[in-house]
Image: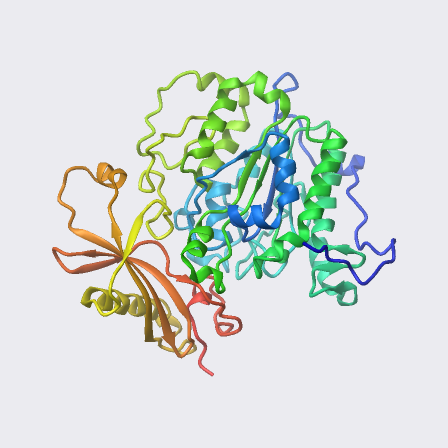
Length: 486
C-alpha cells in the first residue's frame, strides 16, 4: 500500500506543537483518589473507524504483525451490536444500549455531560484522562448531536481539531493530509505526547480516527505506516510498560459494492479487536491472561469490553475474584474478558440483536414468496412511519424491488436457549430497493405464524450511500431513511 505524501514539505508546518504539563494544568487533575500502593494498569484505546477484522489483515499488515509479535490477543468472535459508530461505542463506553440511556431521543438538544461514561470512573479513581478524535462534523458525540458542554476529559483534542478545520489552505490529498503530515499522524502524535508527559501517572486515553477509513475500505492501509510508527515509538520509549492496549474498530465497511456481498455483510458485523497487556501481566495474573487467550475464540461484544475496563480499575481484586466461579453467566450481557466466556454463548445470551448476529444461519427463499412480500411491505411501512413526523420534508418511500430474501435456520444453540417450546416464528432477512431515493435497505423481521404478526429485530440498515439526500432532517437516526422533498 502506497503511503500518502502531503504536498506541503515544510518541516515546520505541522499545525501542531504538543502537550505540555505545566504546574497550572496539573492543578486541575485530582490525583488524591489514587492509592500510591495500589497496583494500577493504564489504559490506551486506539480506535479506527469502519475496519473489519479481515480488512485489518488485508490493509494494515504491518500494524497487525507488530501487535501479534508483542503478544496481542486477536478477538476472532468480536461482534458489533449496532449499526454505526455511535450505537456501538455507547455500549463500549457505558455498558448500555443507546435506547437505555435517559432522553436518548433528544441527543441533538441534550449534552452528554450527565451520562456515566467509563472515563469518569477512571477520573474518580485518580487517573488522568484524554479523548481525541480527528473528525469534527462526524465526531462520535457531535454528529447531529449536542456534544459536551464542559470538557469531558482532562485533555480533549476537539478545540484543536475545530481550529484545524478552518485552516483550509493547509489541507491536501482529499483532506487526508494537513500541513506536512497525514492527519492520523497528528492525532497519534498528540496521543504519544500524552503518554510521554504522563508516563509516571495513571492514565486512561481514548483515541479514535475516522476520516481515513470511513468512506473507502481500501484507504485504511494508507495509515498503516503511521500506526506502526506510533506503536514502535511508544514501545521503544518504554511508554507502555504499565499499559493495556486495545486496538480496535467499531464495525466493518457499511456501504458499497463489497457490503452487498455475503462476506461483506459478515465483515460489517465483525470489527477488528486486539488486546495487548504489558509483559509483566502474564506472570503476575496468569489466570486473567489465560482467560483472555481462551476468549479469543468466544463470542464477544462491546458490552464485554466495558466490563473489562471496569475490571481494570482494580485489577488485583479482579484477579482474586477470578479464582471463584460463582457468577452465573447465562443471562449476562456483559462478561469481562478476564473471565472465561462460555463456549456455547449465543447471540441471545450476549444481547446481540438477531439483525447483527453472525452466528445465525440463513437459507435463500423465493423473492415472490407471499410472506417475503408481506415482510418487505412491513419494512417499507416501518420506514415511512419513522419519517411520518417529518412528512413535510421527507418523501414517502415505495418499494421498487426485492433484491434478496433469506429465512433463518435454527441451530442447536438457539434451540437450546429457547427451550422445549414449539417454535412459532421464523426470521426473514430482506434486502430491498425503494423509490424515489433508490435506497438499498437490509432488515431482519420476525414473522409469527400463529397470529401472522411481524416484529423488527434491531435496526434497518442502509447499505448504499445517501449523500445529501437527507440534509433536511437533523435527527441522526432519520438521516439514513429520509429522502428530502425537492
